[in-house]
Picture (cartoon, rainbow, N blue to C red):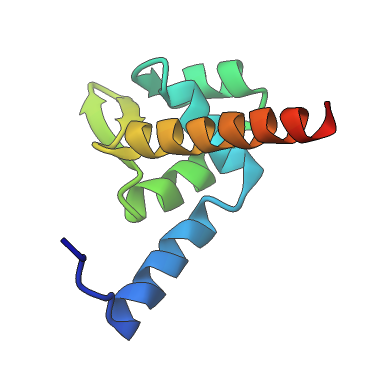
Length: 107
């Protein structure tokens, strides 16, 4: 069954969300969160990015629903939002398939 076409507004919203993923530092943070929930301090340690930089990117990722957060005392923990891990898996699968296809073409 065919899926309904996206509206112009929906296309614009989707494009804005994908723009958020166009920053490598944000992908590094999302990748670290694939291993599980992390505090800002843990993300700074795990990514090598500065604290202010991590916090800035987390705010944007959270505002676009890519990460969820919860507060425990004075510490805020971040985790991948639902389906973001699936999106990462889809992209990883596509990259592997593309690499395999290129290797076969060059062999």
